[in-house]
Amino acid sequence: MSVNKKQRRINWHNVLTGAILFAAGDSIGALLTGGFLYQRMLGMMLLGGSLYAWEIPAYFAHLQCRFNKRGLLNAFKRTLAAGLFFNPLWIARHFVFIKLFSGQWQTISPDILVIATESFIFCFPFSLLVNYLIQNVISLRKRFLVSSVYSALTVIYFALSEVLFAVAG
Image (cartoon, rainbow, N blue to C red; front, side, top):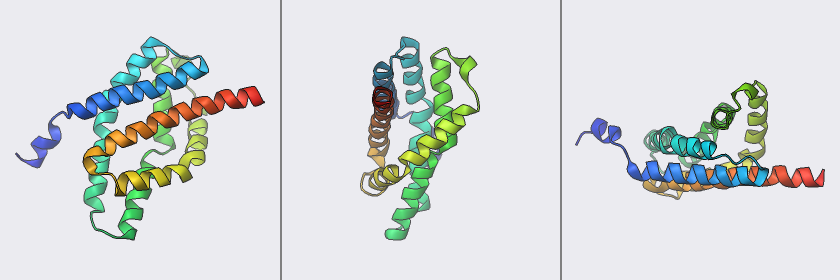
């Protein structure tokens, strides 16, 4: 089978992994902040099982090919490239999807980019550590699964932080 045909096949494991983990993480975060909606959960299932299930593993495979040599320099390049993939624009796009799935399209504004940038900056040091492990320790076949678990935990953490800071403040 040629590489092109193999790349076009649907990876049902990634579809199910993305649908379940992205929806679960977002739903737990939404429950913690009082923003749970079934339509949002279904939207996140669709997003996690389609776009994210395709683009994230494809990017990880690209990194594996691009920086396929052993050594600390290539490990660092894979780590940095993976960390930068989930940049403020990617995070803002994710927030826009959440707003759309929640029926809050009228609240979409450029402020989302500010929040996404702050989220990115705050998480980047820890994200580099996790992405180092994902890109250099975990096999390519399992990277989307591990990355999805990390993403689900990150969403829960942000929701929990929002609740704790509201109580403390």
